[in-house]
Amino acid sequence: MKEIKAYIKPHKLNDVTLALHQMKGLTGMSVVDVKGFGRNRGKEAPNRVVEELVDYVPHVKIEIVCADSMVDEIVSVIQTKAHTGLRGDGKIFISNVESAIRIQTGERDGDSV
Picture 1 (cartoon, rainbow, N blue to C red):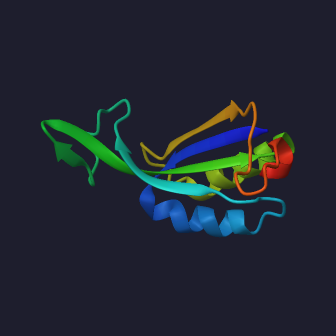
Picture 2 (picture 1 turned 45 degrees about the horizontal axis):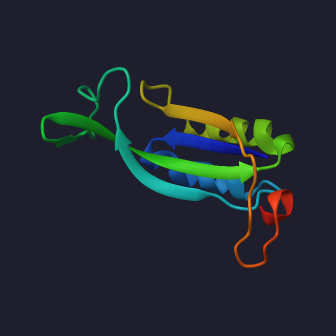
């Protein structure tokens, strides 16, 4: 199993979500509003948030745990639908998931997702 974390611009969330809904086998995703900064430290971002003299840029974090076989397709969808061509489009990170457990049933690993 893999975990995909994608940081995208908030206004691209609907496009990404609608495209991911079309994928067979995708069992779900989590979405969190986040703020941070990248290489330009948020100073040039039009929607930046200033807190205690630090500039942050709002983004949305998408988290998906999936079978290894789905990673390339999911990443392709996110990359295509979140792309604006402007600096700060976001990042995608892929990590191994050692184990997963569904609390309700006790199912483990692939069956739990």
